Image (cartoon, rainbow, N blue to C red; front, side, top):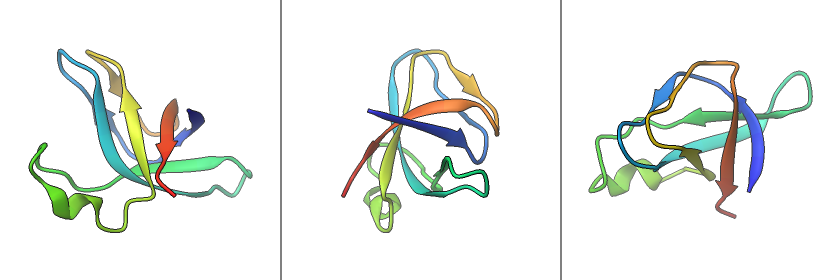
Length: 74
Protein backbone atom coordinates (compact mmCIF):
# COMPACT_ATOMS: atom_id res chain seq x y z
CA UNK A 1 0.00 0.00 0.00
CA UNK A 2 1.11 3.56 -0.68
CA UNK A 3 0.16 6.77 1.10
CA UNK A 4 -0.81 10.25 0.00
CA UNK A 5 -2.74 13.38 0.86
CA UNK A 6 -6.54 13.26 0.67
CA UNK A 7 -7.99 15.70 -1.87
CA UNK A 8 -11.57 15.76 -0.53
CA UNK A 9 -13.43 14.46 2.52
CA UNK A 10 -14.28 10.75 2.79
CA UNK A 11 -15.72 8.53 5.51
CA UNK A 12 -16.52 4.94 6.33
CA UNK A 13 -19.06 3.50 8.72
CA UNK A 14 -18.70 0.19 10.58
CA UNK A 15 -16.44 -1.69 8.17
CA UNK A 16 -13.31 -1.11 6.10
CA UNK A 17 -13.96 0.61 2.79
CA UNK A 18 -12.08 0.81 -0.51
CA UNK A 19 -13.29 3.78 -2.57
CA UNK A 20 -12.46 4.38 -6.25
CA UNK A 21 -10.08 7.33 -6.43
CA UNK A 22 -7.75 9.23 -8.71
CA UNK A 23 -4.10 9.81 -7.84
CA UNK A 24 -2.04 12.69 -9.21
CA UNK A 25 1.10 14.50 -8.06
CA UNK A 26 0.41 17.38 -5.67
CA UNK A 27 2.21 20.73 -5.99
CA UNK A 28 4.37 19.64 -3.02
CA UNK A 29 5.40 16.44 -4.82
CA UNK A 30 3.25 14.05 -2.76
CA UNK A 31 0.44 11.81 -4.04
CA UNK A 32 -2.91 13.63 -4.10
CA UNK A 33 -5.68 11.03 -3.63
CA UNK A 34 -9.15 12.24 -4.64
CA UNK A 35 -12.19 9.97 -4.17
CA UNK A 36 -14.43 9.64 -7.23
CA UNK A 37 -18.23 10.05 -7.01
CA UNK A 38 -19.52 6.69 -5.75
CA UNK A 39 -23.01 5.41 -4.89
CA UNK A 40 -22.14 2.01 -3.41
CA UNK A 41 -20.68 -1.41 -4.15
CA UNK A 42 -22.77 -1.85 -7.32
CA UNK A 43 -21.48 1.38 -8.89
CA UNK A 44 -19.12 -0.03 -11.53
CA UNK A 45 -19.07 3.24 -13.46
CA UNK A 46 -17.17 4.86 -10.56
CA UNK A 47 -14.23 2.60 -11.45
CA UNK A 48 -14.00 4.09 -14.95
CA UNK A 49 -11.02 6.40 -14.87
CA UNK A 50 -10.07 5.45 -11.30
CA UNK A 51 -6.34 4.96 -10.83
CA UNK A 52 -6.48 3.77 -7.21
CA UNK A 53 -8.59 2.43 -4.37
CA UNK A 54 -8.61 4.66 -1.29
CA UNK A 55 -8.51 2.57 1.91
CA UNK A 56 -10.52 3.77 4.90
CA UNK A 57 -10.50 1.77 8.15
CA UNK A 58 -13.84 1.23 9.96
CA UNK A 59 -15.48 4.33 11.46
CA UNK A 60 -13.12 6.80 9.80
CA UNK A 61 -13.92 10.42 8.97
CA UNK A 62 -11.01 11.72 6.89
CA UNK A 63 -10.87 15.34 5.80
CA UNK A 64 -9.04 17.00 2.95
CA UNK A 65 -5.34 17.20 3.74
CA UNK A 66 -5.23 14.05 5.90
CA UNK A 67 -2.67 11.35 5.10
CA UNK A 68 -4.41 8.23 3.73
CA UNK A 69 -3.46 4.81 2.33
CA UNK A 70 -4.34 3.64 -1.18
CA UNK A 71 -3.75 0.78 -3.62
CA UNK A 72 -2.65 1.80 -7.12
CA UNK A 73 -4.69 0.08 -9.86
CA UNK A 74 -2.18 0.23 -12.70
